Image (cartoon, rainbow, N blue to C red):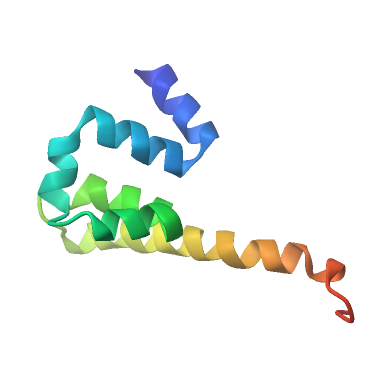
Length: 94
């Protein structure tokens, strides 16, 4: 199981979401009422979705919101870091 988790970490959060959803669909059903939120989470905020699924079924306490917020920051940095790293490819950007 440890090797599976490590390989999913290297493949990325979207691969982890798919495999975890296939292995434990009841946990995902307990976390989300419909299919729309996990789908948007898969597409836009995969680390936040994974963090929320880890903490949500037992109820989210104050300390657990820190980890969900940290995952949100990682997702936002992933979106903005690509633009910052490619800023020299844009015409006219200095």
